[in-house]
Image (cartoon, rainbow, N blue to C red):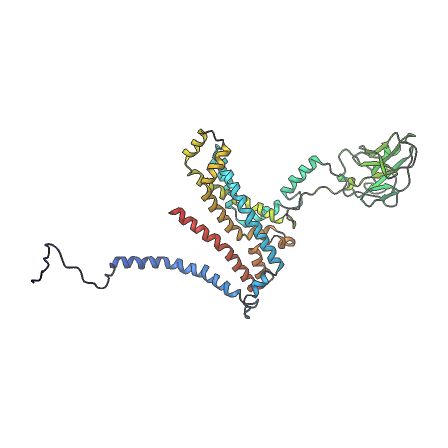
Length: 456
């Protein structure tokens, strides 16, 4: 048999022999080196400002306050035994649950409404403006706004104005009876005559403790009313300020320059039951007519001397956390509105118009079309705000007064207080920092994945 030799086709070359992979062209290598050189400063800064502090804090959390004795997980165990830390965890949970949900809801509502406003850009600018204010300045602003004194705190000034418009307040909160002149103080703060009074009697009720400048404008001298006699079926009297400007006068006697106390409530009491009630005139005079025979007591109710309504204790232990969350909402509502508004502008208008043509009202369009289509944007805004509220520090530290600082503390402020604010225990503070990092990381990972999916 003859061997068959393969015939080479014209124009073909033998297959290349296996060998080392060719090196990339020199310009490509130079480009990689240049990229590394450009990124290197950022990597060095990232390592110095982020990676090293995180690793150092993790290591420091395993040592005691002095940093010399290894305690293992002792700081982490102490963290969950400390009442202040547990309160900080509780307050942080309130922040995470309440603040992002409210901000996302407000931002969604405002973004939808702004689309229907003629001056939408100006309205957005107005709501976004608080973002330009630092947390320090915002904390000082709201610390003053929440002041309990109505003369300083704008919120309590508004609350007291509304309260006083519907409920009458006392004109004489500092008034008290002149001691030793027949008026006895009751347990509820009222004053009543010690001796019984009968129809046909006239009584004088001397009061002190009221500055002449604080008297009502319509107050007039009480001397004329003090000389009037009572009819047989009435009890007459006068409530006056037993104080003579410039000195002089007699205690318990109505002098010419002494003023009556108008608007004072007076009651006639018999057998422990109020049988008649009246209000003093401009000269402090009063009378009860048509009374039957018998013994009575003339009483000045405690409402005459009640302290004026001072408003709400916004920065008290009960309301301090909601008050600080309110300040946070003021700052970040514009941020949520702008982001959601940007997502709203990308919605397909044909879907909205088709729904309107099918007879859907605006509420149905909002609930069944707008919100579902905006779900990715709402999720990103919500998670971003969750990360932000976990790190809140400035507002809590500035707005909460010292006595209620512990009631308002969150993990970030507790970490600072334990480490530098008097605790001087950097081991426990580092453990709190690690806990805060562990809480923030899942939300950050979720947000990064969301961004990557949206880019795809």
